[in-house]
Amino acid sequence: MKINAVITSCLCRFEPISSGMKNSDYVIIGGGLAGSHAAQAIRENDPDGSILLVSNENHLPYDRVPLSKNYLMGKMKSEVLYVKQPNFYADQKIELLVGSKATKLDPENHDVYIGNDIKIKYKKLLLATGGQARRLSIPGSDLKGVFYLRTIDDADEIIKVMQESKNVVIIGGGFIGCELASSFTKKNISSTIIELGPKILGRVFDQDTARWLDDYFARKGVKIMTNTTPTEIVGKKGKTSGVKLQSGQIIPADFLVIGIGIIPSTDLAKDAGLEVDNGIVVNQYLQTSNPDIYAASDVARFYSPVFRRYMRLEHYDLAVKQGRLAGENMTGKSKQFEELPYFFSFMFDVRIEAYGDMSKYNNVVTKGNPIENGGFTKFYLDDGVINAVMMVTRKENVEYIKQLIYSRKKINDPSILTKDEQKIGATT
Image 1 (cartoon, rainbow, N blue to C red):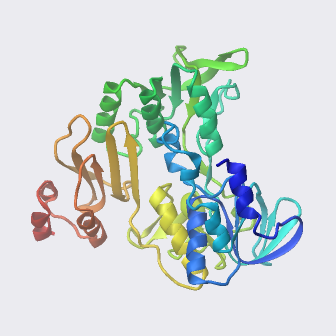
Image 2: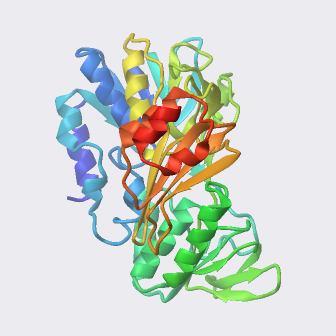
Image 3: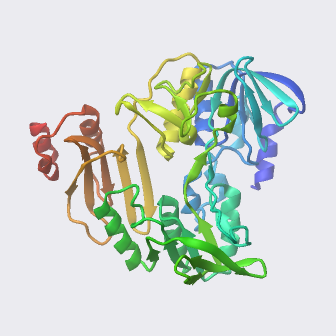
């Protein structure tokens, strides 16, 4: 089913918005995981309230996570990415406005403006605006054949160029860069990762794990260039042909993908006078500085009662759970967001899962001996308290791991973490 047909069939059941003013009990800005799950939670808790979901993309709400993996590999059709199929929104009386951008927010009067001529009056509003791909500003970055991966449309463009390419350069050695390198290599496209730092994923993991990943990717045939700065994208006849490094070396490439993170889309909130600080600041109920406006997922800098600090994360699980919680609280509930952060990633034969906050630790304990595709668990501790646990192609008792983190208890002998869980419990 073509995307345009999907959207048309979904919207035709609703009265179209053309210009002027419209009232809606609940307005959601953002057509990703958080926005869609918020709409579902609102309907479950308020059977009659009107819901309007606004997305600036010409797609139904969808999941971005598979874009760098199964979708890029051709193993997943676009319809499978959708959180719900068109009939769901129609049946639940959730109105969708796609291909439309929220341009102004007036919290005092409870108005949000769409484009230049639509004003929507709301009772409760959710900002699930996500983020935009961070752009690389070096000469040649506007050449044909330079891509970013953030949307279905981005992925479709990359898929087209993959068919006629033999080598690719990926700038950025974070999750998106590593996942892309895995997908390209599986498609027999020679891949080079250029990373400014000393290790791929070095900003996420401890140095031993990052070093192990470096070696693993090298064994899989990916060329890793760390401590490396690209200075220019070179090309011929308006199309990229490679990347020039600070050393003067040129790495040939049929195309480039830049994955250097995202910038949270906070302009709407900032211009409206909401508190913004590396994201839209929200409390444990996901309320912004205006109690009738909520924010969730990539764009939200939220307070965690578990870790007693603010954080902003970009994970699938967080988007789903924060979206649902925001939706529930918009209907009048007062639930705190107390979930542990959780993320996962697939790269070649490696599956990485992590629970907790990996940004703060001063000791790392390893359980298991790393093998070719993993087989180890890492405990990240701060002054003896477990802040996070990561599993690399290894199974653990997840509920027990979560219990260890939630307890916030100090472990006097961290080496006990290499033993079975009964022994750990006896010493905490």
